[in-house]
Amino acid sequence: MSDDEDYAPVDFWTALLRGWCGRCPRCGKGALFGRFLKMQSHCPACNQALEPYRADDAPAYFTIFAVGHIVVPLVLIVERYGQQPPLWFHALLWLPLSVLLALYLLPHIKGAVIALLWAHRIGAPKPSAGGLDGSS
Ligand SMILES: [Zn+2]
Image (cartoon, rainbow, N blue to C red; front, side, top):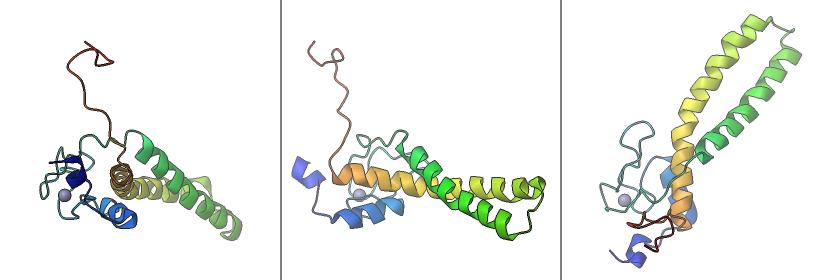
């Protein structure tokens, strides 16, 4: 498969939406993940190599950022307009909500980050057989 075939013309937002939905950014048919967050090495539908697109810590960072910006305002609203409920109420409400939100958002955000990397052709270099710089 040539380089141009790897990057079939797909609109950036289409690729991002496909990634958000856990689908291959190239074809939109194959699943990005085999299990919860375990990426497939190749798209099962179009055989697009997915291994070079490593999201690393970015999805976790963006998920924490999003969950914080959703939950903290809700905590402040409940504290302000909810007649200052006791701390156990906050713990009982916000801790499970934060965990569930993070578990929901993390695979979506990871898929979107992988699609973004794919759309911009930001793949990790292939490991070389030689030294770290590939010269030997
Ligand atoms: Zn595909």
